[in-house]
Image 1 (cartoon, rainbow, N blue to C red):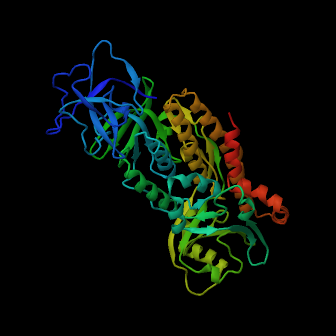
Image 2: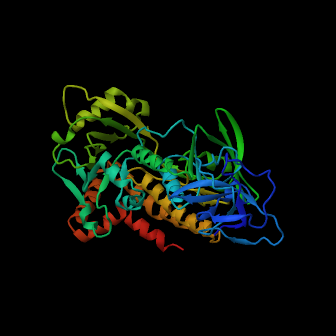
Image 3: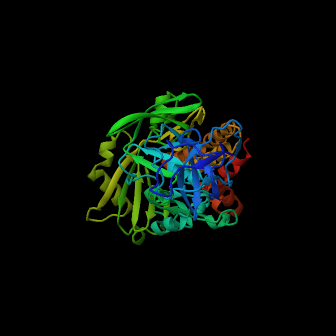
Length: 497
């Protein structure tokens, strides 16, 4: 718990003047009344500010420290600070805390799902957070779109699940299928309904989550975000994270009690620290198209989430409200540019459902698939989460979900440290989430990649037999879905000391 010296508020009732240059009052001044409950805001300098809770809203009030010899430290949380007659708490907008301060309690690099979930958990626990984002706004391009049951359970306290559901599509079941046949292996998430409040996959573009989180965060005076701010250097100084920041109007260097790197697979923070990101690339790229076409009316047996084998290749088809995401891989020896081209895209789509008119492709993109992991998710006072810490195959939709789980685990451990626990507790965060990445998320996502892209007939037959055994036995299906829904990885996390 934070501590501070006995102090008096230094904003005058008349004119809102600061008494920093005024004569100090006596030990308690001419005390007439008590201030509301306060909490030290120690990021702004030594005992410079406190937060005052007034009418259930938080404001900053400037303080003057009384430097008499017998001053005592005392706990600030829920205590009262006397202030003298003629002076009062300043009812004003929160001080722009990060504009001039060279020290920040918590800075997060990256305004994606991982960074903003982490920010929300910390801010709502009462800690000021600054988020730095190198782009001019939130990303709205085609990225992750799958929310698994375990992730929806974690997001529920942040009040975003219901609006996310309104923006997306619920899939109670999903399937493997052999295109052009009636062979399907359907997985019903109802078999794990006793273990989650959300027994379904939600397909919703990740930018809906970041938009909802930002709207919630911007209503909290403890939160600030800076777009067009790029991290240019990272190091450690005096037991704090030190980092350079550049924006269109200038550059500076800040220090933070904790710097959280949630800046993605090409993490600038990781790069500036020179940390090895060991792993490998998968041999085949993924091509994704977005279309507004009623495939469910033309392809028999479609569910909301479908992974299919064709005679010599594969595709996935995932519904997000009225849109469909269609993904395939380049043929052997085919360049990414050719695979993205209109003739090749139309050929793949006509394989799905033949028709004379060309399909209208709304968006197209390609993804290089990698599997990598840091040696540690902690480097002094720098903490890593999400793609900045580990990468995996996107087949099965585990990447963003694992990152959100990282954010939850990181916030839980960091809050304990901010509350007085030893900093070494954050090493447990690293052990937990790194172990889960290496032993749960990466093996499962790699298996999904290889299953879906298998072309050898005999190996396909063996995989199909295994899938049939699973879906025909409710208990086996339950065990399989504990993994794919990421419930088991959350259970595993809590078992690691």
